[in-house]
Length: 111
Picture 1 (cartoon, rainbow, N blue to C red):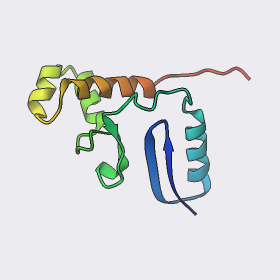
Picture 2: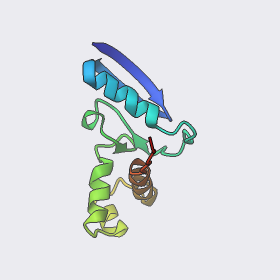
Picture 3: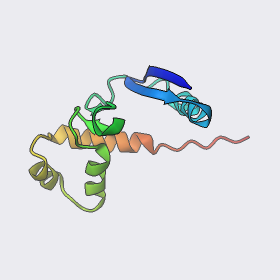
Picture 4: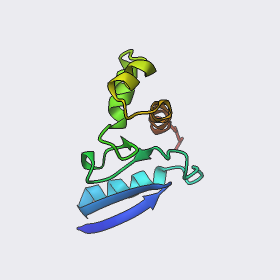
């Protein structure tokens, strides 16, 4: 088992214990992240084990990025989301979408 705390591309990833396949998976994920990414690119997206189990959230609040992106995907407008989450700002929603787009970048490499 490995206990680690690592910061990659401005994101801090922490785990109490990690071993075997989980450790190998983490190394593969970290290695595949673009090293050229601006570390301030997602300054509104936070990861904290004490908040929502470390899921990507908006500015340390208990509002996961996945909730915001899901609402947009189901047709909610920015104004509707802001009305439902008064602590959010328009820039939070924009960055949640940018983060989701960044996560879905596909790279195909030929053998």
